[in-house]
Length: 447
Image (cartoon, rainbow, N blue to C red; front, side, top):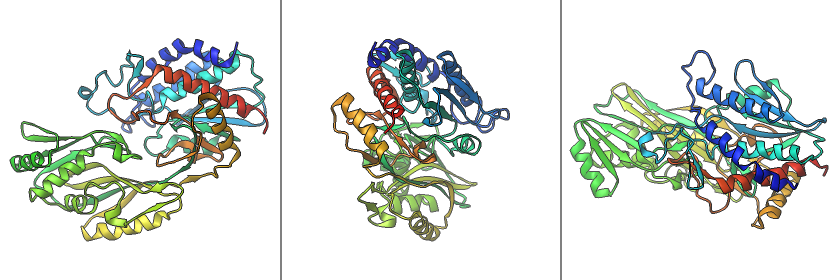
């Protein structure tokens, strides 16, 4: 039986596996005293390891719960496939067509948080390896699935793995786009803060790497703000003493794909003559831009494109204010240029800058052997353009040498990661798994 046919015959098992896994709300909870990242993430890690064990993999879970891995094959060389079991928060479940942690299978799709990022692609890759086992492919190298636990936050799980375990020879992470990613922008996430005591409160955003779809205001000037929102044509609702601006969530790497509710509400507050250091900074130095041009001017390069800047979380009250901002920095731009420029401008508004997370860029030449091999497999399986891409996404490819991001999103496909009603099409799940099976088979062979 061919590998592709075997993958197709595993379809129903993949659907069940993904639906069950989505039902585990593996969102970060650092208040849990028994696990490093919360019971949901711990359960999700154990669930995928148990499934891999039933499929015939050798498995290991870090005793402290920071990571796990599943492995098949023999040999000195190791093919690493890196994925993460955590997901971003779902936001208000009432905004979802199907429950975000229900794993609904409807209309040829599997719905739920993590369907595309990253549980669906992991399932596709795991069953790709299972298909190789079923069809008797010589596993002359080890294939190790490495499962991280807080990729959506600070990468502590994968960093603990790197400290304790053997590193792969080469491999990929199924956590971006096809054909293959050769460059990923640098990432810098910061918090701007001040002790300014506001006579109103404003909040918004559920994750630092997701464009906020809701921002709220509570205070005594709702009428004036609502007037501004109506003039601007921005969706909003009032409920008692609270006003809610409604946007559209998207991944912070592509802020133009979303509608930033924080930016809309800040602009309305500014227009209604309501001020604070954070409100003034956002209104005057971010506006509705997503490229940081009001602070840095034109910041781009020929390899990876333009800087992205996304204000993703805010908390303003009588106790002070905090604003979380996500920057994706072109690979040839020195992050110090961004941080120094941000500090100078923020200081003028009385805001301090704290770095929450900083990750160096990734850049492999387009002719690198790994890039060539994976793009070739993609072309052979799809017949589509296989020119390697650059992205603003920050994937586990940066965590280890000779790892690149490979799928699962196809060109032109709607990007649902980090958004309401996240889903993966079942037909795409199967095709992705077939591509991964061919890719792993190719990587098993000597150059």
